[in-house]
Image 1 (cartoon, rainbow, N blue to C red):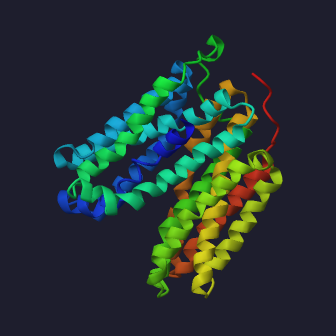
Image 2: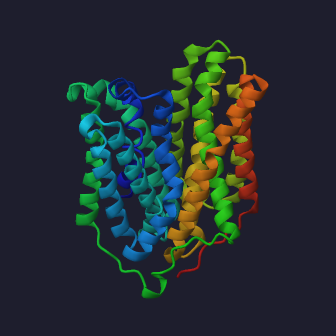
Image 3: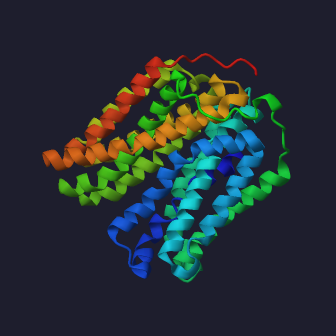
Length: 376
């Protein structure tokens, strides 16, 4: 169930890029509108995380996850109704809100279902999340679109089906565990807690690294006369994440809440960035793959920390604060990288944002107190 729900965090979101040319053609959207369509769900992942915490406090993590999954499935399937731009944008916003409601529910379920092995359980749903990023890109154009006669509307609806299936399986195969009455109102993140900000900055660094690399790798390679490397480097960046989740599944106990592991990752990210920016084509591809690999470790180990560091009944509002800060702040990194490129006219300067993301991860990890939560 955790693996499926992890995949559902990204399946419907990443179902859009493969069909963007068709949407652009049929709805006559401007490039600015296309950018807004892609960025709107990500923004909502930060904005709606705290309401997700409230939903968990009222319903419990399992029921909140079911409600969120049904919301995502219904809105994602409805995006193509009427081939209308207003409907597409409205349903995309609702879908993004549903994903944001689901996000804090998963660490809470890890704390409730797998209190003795949170690192392993987190690696399971993170593995689903990473595959959920890749499956739509790999399957939509060669398989799904021919199956539905080239209809982007039907393609988006088909990617909503696994989300609805997860909701049904979660309803049928798991049981509700009532939350203690005393903890029900406890949903608002503690913005004064250093832990909220430390995890939020870890999440922001991880997201900032991923989004800035995906944003600038294609333009940079075109600018330096290596357009033939774009596909290989982007594939290496994204596929490089999968071995990290596999290793974490095997070695979760050794890696989770391991300060040495957390502190070693930012320097390794910087070395990988240097390799990517080097003169050799094969080294650029290897560096991109290493950036995905080490960046995925940061993501997974950060996701594993809330159920490790606080009691199960407090995981949802710590996670909500972490996601709110993480997704909101992560968008500053691509903006800063683009501003540097514009100001200096040097394409390489955009990757200062990626280096800054690694520095943020290091500082946040250095200040973390990695004490295990006491049973609540």
